[in-house]
Length: 179
Image (cartoon, rainbow, N blue to C red; front, side):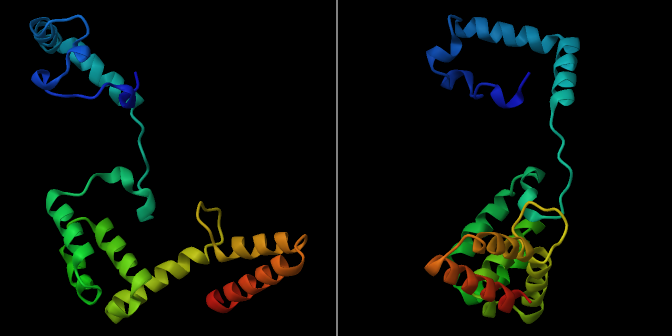
């Protein structure tokens, strides 16, 4: 059983005829009642679902927390406000998010676009986080300075002319920016 391979669920009175197959609405309703009245069958279905459900470990990285739930309706409204608010005022919305992932992402968006519009303490916190990520030395899924430098060195071994100059400039930029 694949939970993501199930058909789209919809109200019976909104379902097009092809969704019902060759069954009448009354036959569909009768079958639904039969299934729901068989509590042992329902329990087996739930147990099968629980056994096949993928469990994701909690991640400390917001990019890998997408399975931790959806934003609440108030947070969705706040996200829309965030995107239309002038940059200099967006930081005021950050503490209003109920979901800490959204607060963190909002701070990172402001930092990426207009870091001068973040309060000093928050700007320093985001900067420290980014530096820890780009200087991470263990195995990871994201790009790091050491990976970029190694790739530059690898490509420089066969680069010539303008390509070699661009790689050298990029390598110098990485060293100057992240050292």
